[in-house]
Amino acid sequence: MIANRTARYSMFALLYFSQGAVLSFFTALNGLYLLSVGRSIADVGLMGTIALIPFVLKIFMGILSDRYALFGMGHRKPYILIGLLIQAVCLVLVTLIHPGNQFPLYVLTAFILQAGMALYDTCTDGLALDTTPESEQGTIQGLMVGGRALGVVVVSGVIGLLVQRTSWSAAFYLLAALTLLPLPLVWMVREGERPAERKFQWKAFKAFSHLPVIALGLLGALYSLIINGANELVNPFLQQKFSIGYDQAGFFTMVWGIGVVIGGLTGGKISDWLNHRRATTIAVGLSLVSIGCLPLIQALPMAWLLVGLFGLAYGFYETVYFAISMQRTDPHIAASMFSILMAIANIGTGIGLGVSGALADSMDYPITFWILAGLNLLALILLPLIFQARRNALPQGS
Image (cartoon, rainbow, N blue to C red; front, side, top):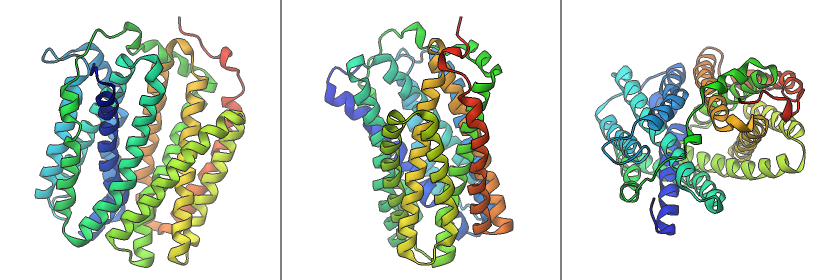
């Protein structure tokens, strides 16, 4: 590993900052970009669903990395380098594609880009687990989460201004350059032997024959469907209602991102302070109210407030679900169970992106937001099933 602590911290922070930068484009501007060239909001949702497939397959990327070292560099470093290069190359190539006339090619490029991102995301997590001393694990996790949030918050505003004043190509070139920032630090990594217990354990799938774990997985899919489906529609809805420019869309995403950070910090504290069931009930209520109020926006000042509230609900719900997932999994196979739960949540995201786009295209935005808000009530059915058994009553790995 990198001996210098500052360089090691910088590498993990930059890897997630680069990911957040690219995610800021997909959150803030991709929908507006496609709409500006004549594609429908249903096309935006379809693309989101297809492009997300690599994140559903992250488990298998982790297994590949566990099993095969490449080029004599180790089990993590070469995959991170490959993932970063794939992402950067795709961001350059996309400047040559017109999504209005070449939509399938644009979607394919986005799929490959997301495959690169999923690859280096998976292996960065693995590298952190493999090489970080226990005394630094909290710091490293904080730097990674903070780096990604900073990437979304800062870069979304910058690329919005860049597109408004120059061109889409300039934004893609900037994102490609930001992708390459961590490369020199990743190249310095020297991997040692990996602990055997870090490898994926297939017996974790057996836990999903038990009702509390099934319900937990369904909650993850449901919350991801709702909040990501709604998030995809926010800027297109605001553009339709107020004719916002790309710079304003970027700033709205900044406000949303700040809300996510605040919601994440608040959700973590409340989850520790109250029990997880009460914290989840609060998360459901926040999601229902914040999404349900979005169609009621009548003026831009109100939009800033409600987009920030929705970001807070997003971060709160996500953090609380992660906390439940970690607390309710069998400690013998916790990492593997958590990977499966995250894959299920990503399936929910993919469904949410496709369904919300199709609904908005056929029923308009307000009705779609209200449908998504109402789906939160299904979570109240799942909570008694999740919390009917104590943690020590969950299936044990053996």
